[in-house]
Length: 339
View: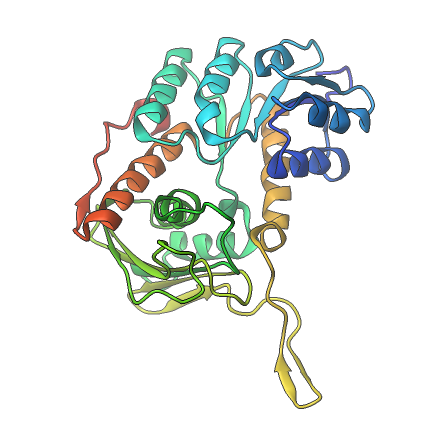
């Protein structure tokens, strides 16, 4: 870090999420600057770096990490590239904020867990941004304090306007339901032990071959049951909600956001068009918390174990989706580093 304690960040991957994080670090985050960007598309990296004073473009993530101005790494490249980048960061003992997924499958995620264990200390915060959303934080506080007794069930809704070309059935689990997987583990402080996927009559708006909507059921180690309505081609906007059903009361988030208007014979409000808009403040808070913790020499937030557990549940979810059966989640033993 510089003499003023400013954290020099290398952003790996400059696509939609990476470029948004570059903007965020430049314009919103305190105590950090973008010192390097890396992308296999050299022209894109050069364009992005060209607008930032003191930022150097690279095509090789390892070269970006070796830049003397770099103190920490934000990984926003495609999931299959994460393992190699994480291992390179571990070799340099650099702090990392890694966008989800940690890696695309449990086997590779477990290798990352083992590599971080060998370091003997945590280095990674995984980018499950919902944990930094104000509504989810309030719900977590209610559940944690036991305000309404023990949580027994969660009801989730996850709706998208539409899906991009090439969106597959497996992606509904890996790219969409993965957020409900992490939220479930975090809110209930329990591992998910089994998954079922029910597939109602599909909407005519779904692309050929994509089963949409779906109802995903989780069971936890403590016997709680969680359902998620996933509807990724709803056609009217982006909606996320969660209701905790406890012994003596319920608590729900995500229904009423923004201004509610009555005018000209109509009533209602706006629905956010996508996840970036809905969770913009959560992304801001997530990156700021990572920067603050890193400058203190600490690591907080979702861990490599959380990334691995999510990958394991995703794997079971895809099998449940394909078979129609209840599929048990297979988890390795949790290392002491993440206890």
